Length: 156
Image (cartoon, rainbow, N blue to C red; front, side, top):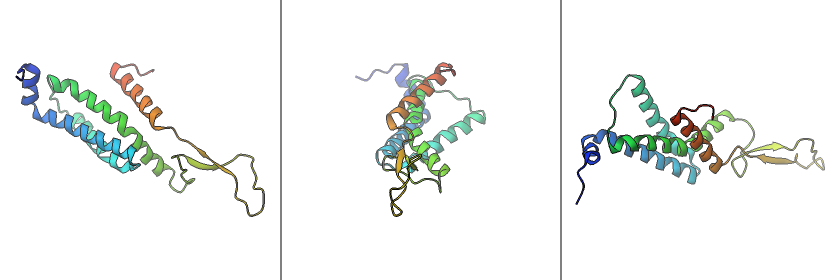
């Protein structure tokens, strides 16, 4: 038997908000695929969905979700922020370093070793890869930033 409490009723009454939560779940899944498949452009829908949501709020939309959806919405938004931040950062860094140093095997950039000289006239300058963060630390950092914003403690 399905309980028909207030949470269940509000879930049925506000299908629009449930749709928003499902849409956020979809863009979070796309962002996870973007990371797993190394295709950061798959995270672009997250930018669009969050941007449209921010625009709607800025224009004064004041409807608030109730019941179960009211608890699911901030979790879905946080999830999108955490998992889509990595691929979006990759896109931003790629745009910022266009024409810059080449990308390395592990997602970093290739730079010359300071003070090293080629061993012969034909030898290349020794290089090394400088990493620009990792997936796990990125998830952790974004989790802390989102948690700090949710609790109103910006100094964290």
